[in-house]
Structure formats: structure tokens, C-alpha cells
Image (cartoon, rainbow, N blue to C red; front, top):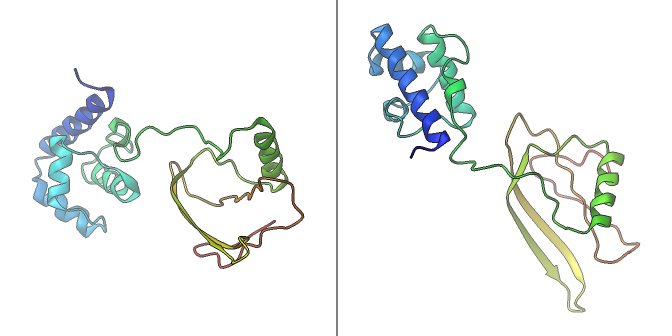
Length: 186
């Protein structure tokens, strides 16, 4: 029994094969034209796509698909509309905050609104690493956080960071040494 994603992947491969055949072009010639247009793609990749063993994923691959549509004189979206869900992404769960309590969720929503934060429903946290340095007295001296975040649609324009203390405190975290971005508002 084929899965829906497998059926769509098969539809993409079949449409690509048909379009190449109808234009009377070899895969090698198509690949060279795409490279000449600035769409770097290997013969192996095109072969995988044509056979249905793999499908285009990611921004660069989707750009190549647009180039294929142009080169084969297909309408924009003719092939890309046949792509199934990304195998690499997997299913995209709804955004989830790192804590469950209703009070904290409400307060987080209020904080995001106060910060005028953009909606975060298209972001996916792939990995977060925390390194905590503790002093001789047992108090936290420094926390270093590294996160890998993926946009599941569009482009990431901002990522809110909310530091929730386990108990009410007057001590505020200081965010410094931001790499790959900047602190915009607090």
C-alpha cells in the first residue's frame, strides 16, 4: 500500500519524466542548461528525482525545480505542486513552549504580545544546547545557549527568547554575545 507522500513523490517523478520526454531533451542536456542558468544540480540528483527515489527538498532544490519548469516550458508550479511532504522535515508539530502550566503559557503569550513578536508557528527548534557554569557557592554564574532553529515556511525574521525563572526573582538575565543576530528589544 503506497502512502500519500509516496503517491505524490511518484506523481512528481512521472510528470518530470513525461516533460523531459515530450521536449526530447536528455537529462544530461537539461542538467547542463540548469547549471548554465545558475542552478547547480548534479546528474545524480536529477536522476534520483526522475526515478522517484528522492524528491527535491530545501530552498536550493525548489529553485532548481523552478528552473526545470522554465527550461521545459512548463507553467510555474506544474512540478512543484506535485511534491509531497518533506521526508527530512517529518511532520511538523504545533509550536510548543518548553513548559506546560497554564499560568506560564498565559504569561508567555502576554510577554510575546508585549514584545510585539511575530507569530512563531513556522519555527521548529531542531537542537538546543545549554552549558551552565556554576560557581563555588553553587550559584549559576553564566549560561551559554546554542540553538539550531529551522523555518518550516518562509524566512526566520526573529526568535523570541523568554527566560522563565522557577521562582519570582528581581534578578534579570543579561543577554550578550549574540551570534547570527542581534537583541532587538527587551
